[in-house]
Length: 246
Image (cartoon, rainbow, N blue to C red; front, side):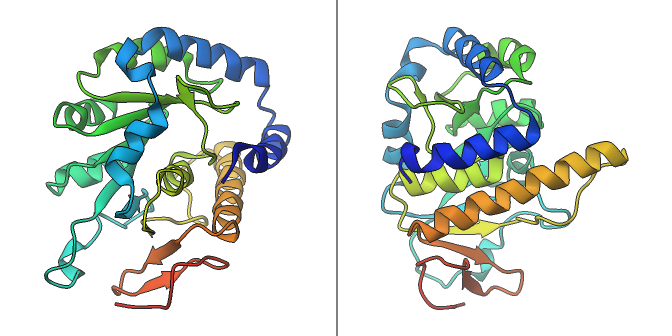
């Protein structure tokens, strides 16, 4: 999805959740300073080198989902690329799966993301108004390939291909990078792991926007599907990923 098509939806999200754009700009400046020079060069191109033309599984952190069941895939099928959304990186690593790409705003298990990065995962770090201290602390500690993203117009140094939370942002990245098909595993827009009622309500609102972002991506023609726990691959509503299969 082109930025010009994504930006109006993000403005609605920012208004609803009170996300001042000045804070997004300040976080982006912090991220630019923290990234090494190589990580500020053509972030989308480097992601596309890993994802273009491939089947990409985007792994979320839905309660009880666990790692994607690759044992269900037919023998002889091409290897997939794995995009882990923040905390899902730990789920993958514990299962012996090193993500191709990790999409993170650094509020999950960052040491595990650093370990995956040291083993070759491209980590796309997202800057937003609430994570400046995490950017300053963690970005210099990643030893491997990095890229940056933010919630404003993309440029040569920081990308914005769309998406709001780490999971849907991973799906948007896969689409922008030219994935052949995008399978969503471990996505749940209803259940929330939070004890505080106010935090739970805000997270539900955020998940609602993430779901709408995926709806928009599928409606835009991206080949998005969900990988169900029974092994079925079901086209995302409004998407173009083909018939339901096993």
